[in-house]
Length: 312
Image (tube, rainbow, N blue to C red):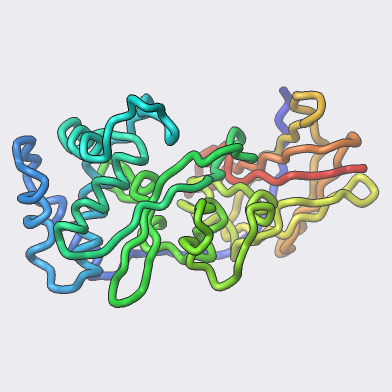
């Protein structure tokens, strides 16, 4: 399968994103705690939260510990297991004992520890879109949390923030609901907490942003337009990377179940859109990746965002 490179010379300054100072201090404290395998959940929760008076900092401490110390279990039981599924209590205890679990393990344990700290939180089940295989989810496939802090509900995805190298993906801590909805659609829509009301069809037509996209804050602003109708076999996609990159583009033919070659697209320096020729008629998925420049070298990120395209 041929990969075509689209060179974009966008000399936009790289912006450094940092955590609030208080969060950095919380994370530093969490990283000083000994990894005591025999400690109980209540005792650990007290160690994590007692130094802080503010509920937000308590939540941050628990979130940071879970994201840094629990490994994702790719063999975990699915969201809709069967009648022999373990209970919530069993999932909490096993996730804590083994220091690994699936999204339910992270979310159940997070809620449990917040409850021990007197902080109200919820388990939210819903649909997520984060890669090629989840572009059109047929059933709920993920679990995450909300927590009530200072009278307001905030959203968290400890699973996606998890990094046992102790470099927590801070993007998924208290995420803006109107950004969170681009990847997470709750079964109960009231748990979206968005300013606008989005239907499931709206959700399916959003771009599919990957975790790598959010990690690098790849573009200036985030678009909610994920479906494009080609005009004269051409699409124009609003996009402006924040820094110098080489874009990687691939097109998947949905009807024929195959990847097809693309002619190079074009984006003039400073433009805020990508112009791309679609070489066939039908419905497609466009995968956009990039080579991101770091000093004198490039790092390749094969999947940053997916769009759907119709060319009638």
